[in-house]
Each structure stands twice: as structure tokens, then as C-alpha cells.
Amino acid sequence: MLPPRAWKEKLPPIGTLGPFFALLLACLFFATQNDRFLTSENFSLVLQQVMVVGVIAIGQTLIILTAGIDLSCGMVMALGGIVMTKLAVELGLPAPLAIGCGIGVTALFGLANGLLVTKIKLPPFIVTLGTLNIAFAITQLYSNAQTVTDLPPAMTWLGSTFRLGGTSVAYGVVLMLLMYLGVWFWLRETAAGRHVYAVGNNPEATRLTGIATERVLLGVYVLAGVFYGIAALLSVARTGVGDPNAGQTENLDAITAVVLGGTSLFGGRGVILGSLIGAVIVGVLRNGLTLMGTPSVYQVLITGILVILAVAIDQLSRKGGR
Image 1 (tube, helix red, strand yellow):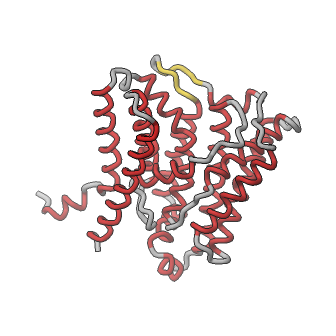
Image 2 (cartoon, rainbow, N blue to C red):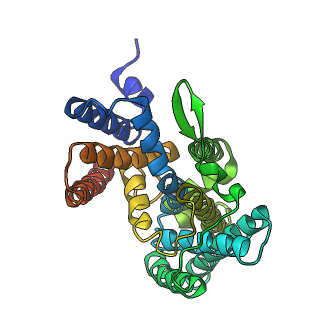
């Protein structure tokens, strides 16, 4: 029989189980409030509603794991969506090329953020606050604040659905889930993924072991930019338009999903699949409260309280582990 300490070491960390239990409790509560909540179609709708924020949260998680933060993610996503749609509609570029250009623009913003953080040593909060405003201004100027319509079918295909066991499932949801699995494997099973955790946990000690910490950070910001571009495509596919006013709340929603998912804002700790659960928690809360007829302002209030609680629990757990 294993001693108590051995059992403790075998148990999963509370940061992994906590978000899952929170999601279960939320589902149980809303199931008692509305009969429509537990239907498969409603859960499919929740996943479609969170797929854009869910993909943004992948990039946000990578940055937060390095003890950084990206406030520009939502507006960079909006810019990527406008670029790809205008190139396809107004210049007649083939959809794959236009999509590639849009993702390229978001990756360039990630590169700019990374260079400012690594080379000039500016705080990520300040850098991304600045690039948020830059991305917003460029989006409005480039689009003339006009929505782009009449998109080619290849740009909206990910928003279409297929039937699975009598339930409509969006192709974009499948893509989101596959990306989470891919990034989970990369972080868990590869040296490059473990370097991300190491940089967030102790950058100086990581540098002394011979790991190029600046290269890791730069790569993380560029990769995050790529995910924002993919999220832009999902946003375009879901709405059927290029919207210059998109992305104005997605940055906070993505950070909320990451924090609720158990990733530490202090870096070095977290599980990427937790961010998926965090995004679904936000989606379930909004969906359940809407079905209950609760005004949207209370949805924002509850989400804010949950974020503060999640950060407080993370802070207390860090102090308890010292």
C-alpha cells in the first residue's frame, strides 16, 4: 500500500481538475433551470459560439505560460479577417492565398510584439496595449469602417455543419479541437514545448542551461499570431462577413478562458486543454443565463467575479506551494 505522500504525488494537480469540476457544476445548475440546456443541439451551439475565442485562447495560453500577456489578440484577429476578406473580394485573389495573407499579417503582429518584448525588453502588457490600438486603427482605415460581404464559399466553409448522431457540428469546431490536441501534444511531448514552460517558470535559470530564451519567446509570439489568424478565418466563416468591428471583446474573453482553465498568470504552470474547458465554461455561463432570461449585464458581472476568484486561487496555491 502506497504511503499518503505517494498517493498525493499520483493525484492530478488541482489546477487540472478544478476547471473540469467547475464546468460540471455549471452544467448541472443550468440543467435544473431549463429543459433545453442539456440537448445535443444546444451543446453544439455553445461550441460554435466559443470556437473563435477558443482558438485565440490557444495563442494567449502560450504567451501567458511564458509569464506574458497579449491584449492585442482580438484586434489583431479582426485585422486578419479584414485583410483576407478584402483581398478575396476586392482584388479577386484566390481564397487560399487571401487567407494565407491574412494569417501572415497576424503573424507579423506577433513578430512585432515578440521583438519589442525580447529585444527592447518592454513589458508585454505595454507592448500589446500599444499594438491593440495600432491594429484597431489599421483595421478601420483599411476597411473604411465598412463590412466586407459577398465572400467566396471557401472562406465560409468552416462555418457550415455536418450531421453527427443527429446533431449539427460545425467544421470549425472540429478544427479547434484538433488544434488543441496538437498543441497539447507539442507542449507535453517535445523539447520545444517544455522550453515554453521553463521560460515562464524561471527565465534566467533557463538561459543558464543553454536554452535560447529570446528565441523561445519570439517563437511563442509569432505562433500566437498564427492562431489569431486562424481565429480570424473562423470568425469570418461563422458570420459570413469581414467585420471591422469584430474582436473588441475577444481579448478579455480569451484571457478569461485561460485563467478559468487553470493557467497561471505568473507563468510556467498550466495545461492547454484547461483553456478549452475555460472557453466552454464562459460559453456555458452565457448560454445558460440567456436561456434563463438573465440580462447580459449580469453575465458580464458573473464572468468578472469568476476571473478574480480564479486568479486568487492561483495566487493562494502558489503561496501554499512555497
